[in-house]
Image 1 (spheres, one colour):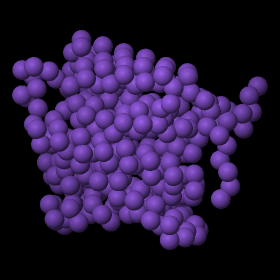
Image 2 (cartoon, one colour):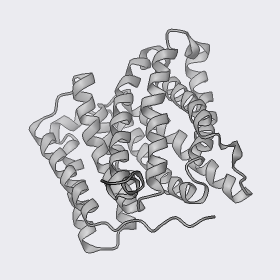
Image 3 (spheres, helix red, strand yellow):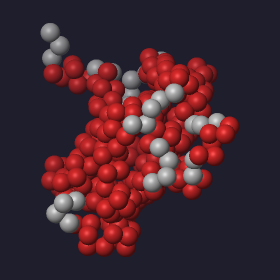
Length: 293
């Protein structure tokens, strides 16, 4: 019978954690849309990051870390990428569907996977994932139904997502999983002024707080804690390509919670992205063991 230690060292362990993180993230994104009429996209992003930071602080207790100035610079960069990614993504959700927003945002992780790849086979899998993403984006006359500003916000969020992956992995390798709590505090401090400027004190109305806490748990606390654990155990290339499943979970979440139906072409895109993720995972090598600081 496999021991607990052997299960934790299994190559499938970080993959399962990442799947849970993505399901939680997209369920939280669907829930977050219900807050937009009350506090707007900036207010929702600020509440999500604020409550997430408080939860992660309580869990990880990062004040035990002793960081050099270079370590703090890394944490600040990681936190700013995290905050900007959240704010820009919610701004995109105001005018474009969840599945399309995540598909456009995924250009960031896809670029990370492409730049980190060295084997010819990897480029084939990434090309298949990219083809699936293109199928998820409306074409021809349908493209006119998408708001250009919303698409631009989603693409900008993708850039921040790429930076989040790069800085997050460096922080995980250098400072461990505690670094996500410090980064969350930086993100909350950066985005909170935007939320207050848009929604004012109404952000903290008693009727708003239960939903905001739910969004924070589903969209930030749980997935970010899982992702920082995965980043310490998985190569950036594999992590970035596995995230190609994110638009799949987003499309399914939009279907279940927001009534955004999938077309036959979009289901074909789902199949292509799943195949690419399975291929890149099967061909990847285990990450080298982490060296002590």
